[in-house]
Image 1 (spheres, rainbow, N blue to C red):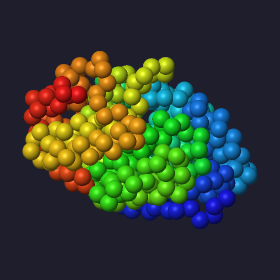
Image 2 (image 1 turned 90 degrees about the vertical axis):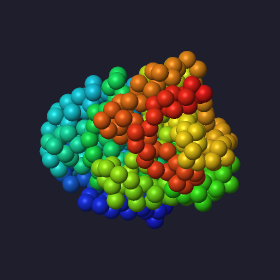
Image 3 (image 1 turned 135 degrees about the vertical axis):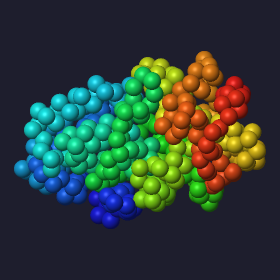
Image 4 (image 1 turned 60 degrees about the vertical axis):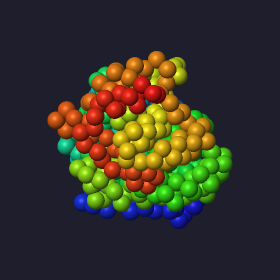
Length: 369
């Protein structure tokens, strides 16, 4: 086991540490050190739990035999990020008799992390949550920053709370069992960090594409750490997304509209997953920026080419109506007084929030696909 993982410190009012390295899901001392009481809810999904839940439970109990651990496994996929699943988590905490020093471990991808974090935020008005992300997407984005939520039919992440984790423990060994499509989805969010604030990282991602897609441990650890450093810097300054943190949503308003309109990637269909939808959304945001005279067409094309080189989609899926997508975008949480606020850019590394965006121009971009 690597005893010296890379670490990234997240500051602010509730500081915590992100640990990144192989073998961390079996590090019982590290896991148990984050538990203040003796009640643990291990929340996972049907794909991840068989692979890693026994290892995590055994490691926790070996380090602290007094722990009472209850597991909750939800069906894998975005379709499980619902109020019904949230109610199951709350019922499980109640059945466990979880006290205010209990801890929820979120073992899985972004769906599990969001759901577990929201349950932890609400049980007894807030208990600890430790994020154990097993997807690249969760490691570089959703596990960091304390945004928790569930989806409702009207939109994605509309019911939730800010609840920073007690720790994030990212075991890069878990990425070896990640399907290639899910790895690419996580790389979309990694590319986002280069797009919004780091041109050198953008260039590095272009140069290291083959290593990252091949699952090279060193390249992935570097990509995760750099992404987490960027997010940590922003979250520390703006924990409740009142300003700069909104930049992290580059491509997300378009992407969330696509996800919602497609029905959150229900099992057995060809809907885009979150990272894929964000990839399309970033291209649309860049093209809108160019159409508004904010950025050069060459920058949006460079972004599109990089995403395409990573095997990610760059166009709106067939069958989605532009007016319906625009209606979904109106429900975005960044909007104020019913007017669209979008994260656009002035070129690679220069994102900004733009208020009162003309809906007619947005519709033009949606129609162009």
